[in-house]
Length: 149
Image 1 (cartoon, rainbow, N blue to C red):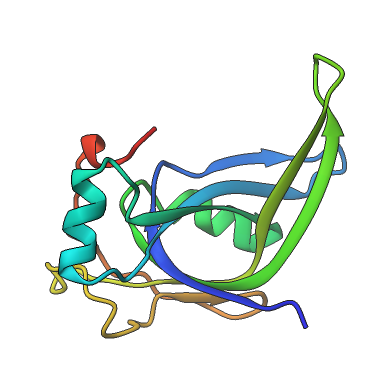
Image 2 (spheres, one colour):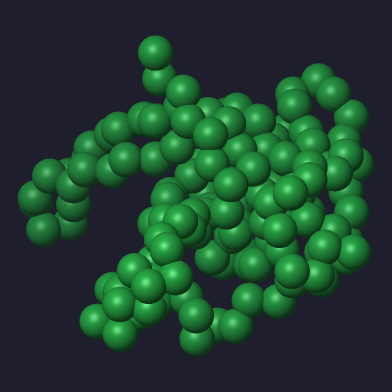
């Protein structure tokens, strides 16, 4: 079974592209907090270590277009998908390996009333292929200095 569920924030604006066949493909990265205790978080930050994982994600079709059109850096999302690995030959001739989460379902979470960015409630901002979706405003602003790249 290959199933992934993530809740996190986009680290940059999604990148939408189209294949030669006209299929939409969107790449984005989600920062997922590691859930460290207050002491462990302070220790990691003091040592210059990350306290979140940065997960590369891909969406296809209508999901890709919606992610690209309605999500931006700092937006909180929940997604369900699967892990996919691939490889290709780099310009230097070396083999390059990638691991991505292919997002089958993306829910836009957080709202203007959710000024602390809590994961407590999913609003109606969800999209699943073939269904309608709603989108609330999000007041969260991510400081660019908080993102390590």
